[in-house]
Length: 145
View 1 (cartoon, helix red, strand yellow):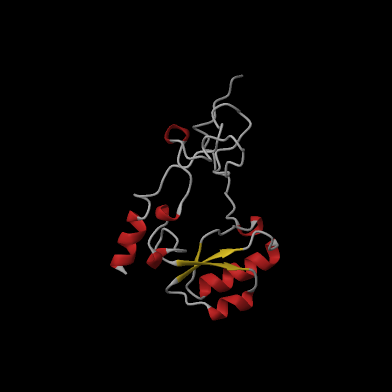
View 2 (cartoon, one colour):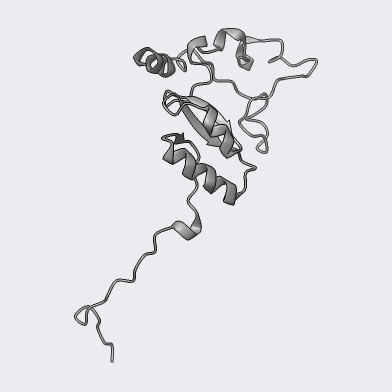
């Protein structure tokens, strides 16, 4: 387990900083990688000054591919039945984005009861603790009249 944690920590050391082509020239472009496809594109032709593009040499170690930074394998869960086939000690779960709130709460309760780490928990509005109004003493109240 210690070796896995070390590999996860060190896997970002050799990764490149991949920038989208023309990112600084157009404000509307997001800072997400997109493959350069132009016929005369300098970045596609891998000119040094135009930025590096992803290649197999930038991949992380095979032993920790698919691992979350917390050191556990990540699994996408859409149903409660999926939890039964997963190991709580080695797997952290992420509840699917298209799962509704009612089913999400059911999955989340079962996961926490089973000892799973939920990577994207949601707090139901009905379950939030209510804040009680503080009693104001007569000394603190000042009359402007």
